[in-house]
Image 1: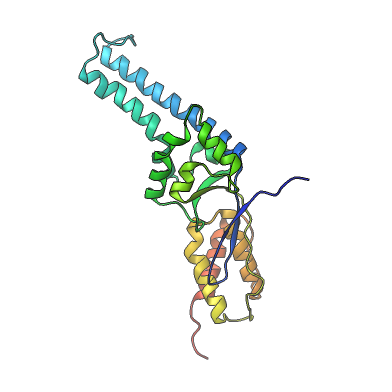
Image 2: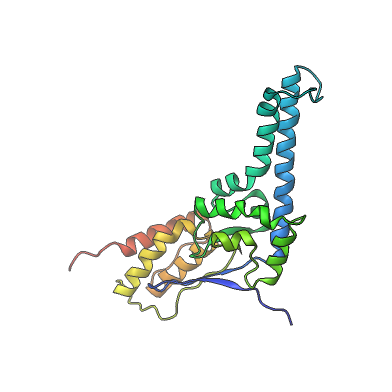
Length: 244
């Protein structure tokens, strides 16, 4: 019998509990291998192109002896691309990289939202420890033995790697009344609108459709245009109604 994957349940005092399936060591390793090849190719491409420009011709020979200009214009940028790739791309893509996107995973904070710049920095600084003694040995062992499959960097940063297509569910106890919102429902709608950018498209649609259905509103389709319509319907639902 297979063991179900652990999940991150985003707690909420207003009732929206979003469950995100935590990615295992296999998905983590696959995403890393894709990103490693990407950053290695980018760093080598810079090194080769900058060397050609530096030598002024079709030669990639290293100058003897190398001077400060060589290190400053050829070596340093290539090393920066290689070592800062994860932090820069994860920051720009809100917890994702090309490798993570292809694998269907992303980094989240403990509250289920996008990680902060400080958390991503801490996570990547601790790669030095996770990479010991070689081939990310410490990080791989930690991801295997910990319940939530986290490496040392995740422990330090308070982050998790979750599947991007994780399902979400609204609490069953939410009260409803067609034609208007009760106080609990108003809080739930307000929180869903606030968390909208941090949720996956699948979770946004699922939560919005469940919530609208509870209040007797027929939700639109599930395509991209339907998602925009869902958001608009929630905004109309949250708008205070004029007194009769």
